[in-house]
Length: 273
Image (cartoon, rainbow, N blue to C red):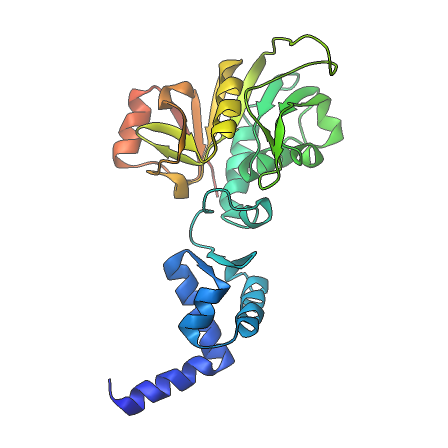
């Protein structure tokens, strides 16, 4: 590239439209970036980057986060805030939620863990009736139609504000000082952070304990994960693939994961777009 061409390219990058296009492409290539990183890369002020990110977020070309942005094309980084994760792969999660809702029988007891995919599941329960739902999500009860439930319980524990969920082993007490009670569900709906041939995992030990206990107290288990989580492992292992009866996702698993799910006897349900 000649010096005049380089100068021209630098000038193009300072134009708002050209800079925004380059910035969006840069975020897509990196997956997750900070405002400071973008300001240095594009030689503009932090305020300018913030304005560009706000515009790109409004146009749906990336997802604005506190202090930066993440790409629409990747799954949410571990422990990303709930507000960010709600906008990532939203259509895939909605399809998965709809497919998982079809596994629920009227009048049944359902455990549901916290997550944006399970929030989509909860919204698709509107045509069900007489359900008992127990969850560790602080926000999920607001997604459930009142006409669908007979009773709704929130599992106790410390609250993680980033996920708006209680964590730790399942604890159910009818009163603050009452005895612990054994609970049992017909179906557990568990959204996980990653799935590989080694099993299901998430980023937080307390969350993994809550998920595992829900699974242990359910007659049937459906694990939910979109295809961006295939082939990954996170810090806290929940358990092997054989824990689940159903694996609900948006795309047919391939290769090693597909073979491992089949060997574990897990029924794969691919949600229709």
